[in-house]
Each structure stands twice: as C-alpha cells, then as structure tokens.
Image 1 (spheres, one colour):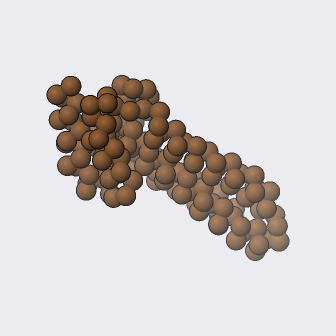
Image 2: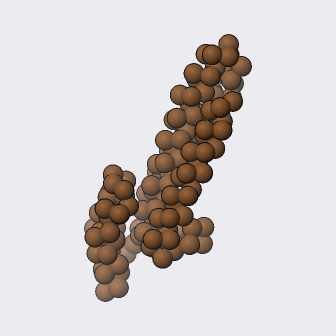
Length: 140
C-alpha cells in the first residue's frame, strides 16, 4: 500500500508545482478556462502538469508491481486496473492540453517556444520565452 501513498504524494507535488507555475505568470490555478483565449502560460503550465501526472502513474505502476511481487499478488488487481487507467488518463491529459488551446496565430511561434522550454527545463529558465510571448500578445 506504500505505492498508493507515494502516488498521492507525487500528485500533490505536481499540483503544487502547477500552482507555482500559474502564480509566476500572474494567474490563479483553477480559475483559467480553456479555449482559444487561454493564456499561453496557462497552457504551458497545464502541459507540464499533465506530463508530471503521467510520470506519477508510471511510478505507481513500477512501485505497485514491486509490492505485488513482495506480497504474493495482493496488490495485483489495484496495480493492473488503477495503474493502467492512471497512465492512460495522464497521457490523454497531456495530449489534450497541448492541443486544445492555442493563442492567436500571430503568437504561435512564441507559444510553442515557451511550451517546449517548459517541457524540457525548469520554469526559471523559460522567462525569456514568457516575456517574448507577453510582448507579442500585447502587440496583438
């Protein structure tokens, strides 16, 4: 059952990171709606959140499999059903958040640069891309 507690802690860390990501962009996590008008920073934060949550699901599958082996199979059904559903949900969320909301076509390049940076670096290294996107949107 330690894998369940670890999964919960991992998800909590992902959500805490999303709150910080939103706040650094002057947004409130949970108060931004999707769609074409969603700020690019929110889209980037959501993409990172989805990736983090998918990683938690993968971690849960590995830990749960080890617990199943150690317990003689008691955790097997939980890991097989729950882990697969969590991984699929995380992957689906990652796909949706990278495609459901795009800024105006004019700022698409800046949005993509910010999103790519947020997926591969810590947020503090992406400030230049964020500033460039804000400047582009301000000029719209």
